[in-house]
Length: 633
Image (cartoon, rainbow, N blue to C red; front, top):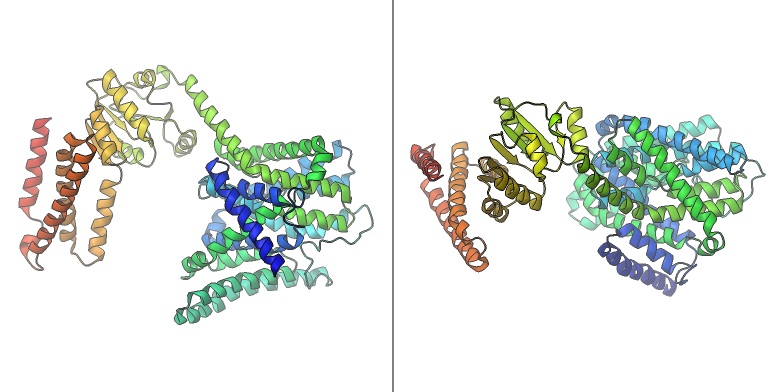
């Protein structure tokens, strides 16, 4: 017990100290865990011993991660992702294995060993890739979907590898410490047809049990209203499915993913995610620490150049293959670079497969030890590689404006409107104007967004709209209006200021983030601003009032009253912008006045009272206010 508590203290202390520091330095939590593992490992400070037993426990974090991912993936989504899974994923495994095998042959290995090395190193790290993409905000986009499809196919490919790799044996099998992926399999001694039948039966049991047994079980437990029992039940499901898959020789992580997919449409999905999420974070952190602690520093010291060359060669080769395949499957350049960088390392299954190949006489033990160290180092370098990718991408973006298209590239004719920024905000305004017969020239600086819009037939020019020469080339001196819809606060203010000075007759409408940003834009020359979330939030509030029992006319009247008062307050506070204390005091008074007026208006609208309907008085008041505003302008 004392040793267990000491080890727990070391692991938790290392995580608590290293991860916040790594985050503050911009390195990410994954790299923080890996560095902590290296420091406390048996080859550095020696605060923890061999990681074999801990790794078996920590790998459960990967199992939980796949279960949670499965909860986010509905069966229909898997069908929609079939191109990424079986197309891009299958091509990645075969292409990367072939490329590494050829490189191994060039380095002098026989073809059997070279092929085995290629197949083993084709795998990537599910835990590190998904965690890193999550921290970078790329998990839910096209980059995350492509990476997930490849990783899922790799998990599927592990199953036949355990049957294929022994066929490449060049030496007599011998016992090793690792049991391999299927070490706990109860069907390994059965004929192949019986093993396949067992696999199908296990999968059918997971699918059928998830649909017809688990849901009633959770309903029964939910009635007890004991959250800790619900959490225990969720963990029981994950452990049971993982154990079942391992018994028939499948990946426990793959089984957990399948269980998650089956429960993705369950009414208990959100509760399961909430209850299991803390275990995922802790166990994944422990997994990353054990990977770091497993880096054989004496081996690194004995063969530094050989190991460094192996790691760099592996990551570059995997990057090039993945980048080429991603481009072949239609990914934009930036997206292909991100996916290729994320998947350039070796995977956690490589540790198991290398141990398995040594026991089967396929790969010699010294070579397996060197490859194990290379895989661990490549996993540790993945967060660094992603940081490097971001720096390179930023430099590419900064270099592209030097070749901005000249006047001849803007062939839309004389534009009525120039739209700067064509994301989720600018597209709506642009489509409305185009539908009413106005010609527009669109500028955007997001390469991925432009390539995506071009696939939908949209004409968008690349360029930094704050450049005066680009605005002039786009026709700003002849256009009637400039709509600024950039997704950058500072750039928006800079563009408004530049355009107002250079084109004094141009009407400038700008997207504002909030009230303070709106005041900045008006002060720098915008004719009118629209806070990007104001109208949508009012629309949502109107819907909420209706769902809470208000009739439609009452809800819309309340929203209109709120809009008029807010705009009046906006203009009243505008002269105080820049006087922090006076502005805050006036804002508080305005909020109290708003609450009082809304309350009084609500009490006037008695049920069944005609005065609570669409009253012409309030509409007339709004029209008068708009007329006065137009006269003032």
